[in-house]
Amino acid sequence: MSSEVAARSDAKKLVRSPSGLRMVPEHRAFGSPFGLEEPQWVPDKECPRCMQCDTKFDFLTRKHHCRRCGKCFCDKCCSQKVALPRMCFVDPVRQCGPCALVSHKEAEFYDKQLRVLLGGATFLVTFGNSEKSETMVCRLSSNQRYLILDGDSRHEIDFTHISTVQILTEGFPPGEKDIHTYTRLLGSQPASEGGNARATGMSLQYTVPGAEGVTQLKLTAGADASRRQATAWLVAMHKAAKLLHESRDQ
Image 1 (spheres, rainbow, N blue to C red):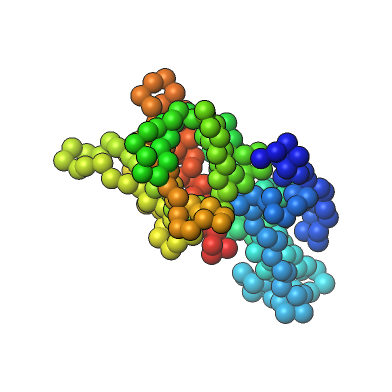
Image 2: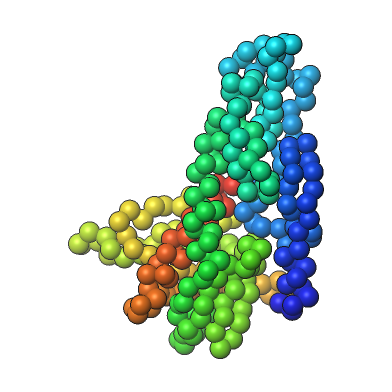
């Protein structure tokens, strides 16, 4: 990616919506794959009562819209103000109870796992069916749009073009062979949790614009001092894949 393109991909602008101030990418094409669109608010005339407790709205009982789902609630059912980075809000915004719970859970990803992905880790990388591996640093780009692999060569993979993430694990009880934690970003099968298993690598399938079929690469954590960082990065990647999978229904 050229420096000019990189600058455009990181450029942001401040916009005001009915829900609050948002810091969004200047160019929609460079938006984060983890982002969510603002919902359409349920029109006031279509919600005479709270959509959770059924309290009737009147002069004293005002209606409020949840910034995450767009539904209409009374103050009691929609009083929490919670950070919502997936919609790029600058400040915490009003959310209903169920949405606030989801946003609180996502906060761990943004506070911890996303930082790990941006920081990167070192892996042995194998492309396709090649028998040769290359030591590379794998990290998420600052706009969260690309997986960047840096070594003797450099590769950038658009996160939105990844079709399958397969986490390789070890550490199951004796008698059980190592298995895969399987996650589809664009498919229908949810992520399976690895229990006490330890992540040792990752297999990716992705499409390349203009090329037929899918391309595959494998990341393997080394056995040296960098292994702990690599394992943390793989766990964070699993969380990211799971977050994208669950986003399909939001």
